[in-house]
Length: 259
Image: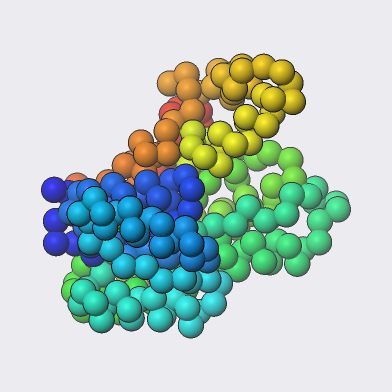
């Protein structure tokens, strides 16, 4: 099992890749700690994983609040005595608006979650990883700042900042055996994207495959990648299979964007 006897923290559990990260990590033997701002979904996810034989704990966390991050990390350490990996998956799309029209308070709010929230969660986990002499941190980024779409400046800018910060983290934490990398996600075929395109397809009176075609035709593999497959790629970055890698960005997009 990939994560036997390992403790993995995943922030941002929600419909889509978040829940797949938790399910797959647990299936691979991890003791999983999950968080998000939505308690009912946390409880539902934890119950599902527990019934399948997984070992899991959860806590409602707003990662924009430093005290929440510290309390969550402490809960995990008190329960299991270690933190082997952190996946910073929590994110907010924020308000869509053009640069000329935007209220930058919206950009700040988005950055407080996507950038500073992720950094706070990592900072809360670092002391325990230092004690162990080893740890993995994966910051989940987005293709949005490499292949921009109109009106997504706040979201894309926060993710660009997260990638930049990750390099400094990797540089400064490497001496403690802590590896920091980014997973840069493209389109993912799961509940959030499916719901959006089903509405688009319904409005146009076409099948969802037709609505997805303009995107799929620009992807080398010819289709949007499934949430679970994307989650597997992210989780690989939390294992000793990449022990020689730190400060890197892995593009997970089926070949839509090749830097």
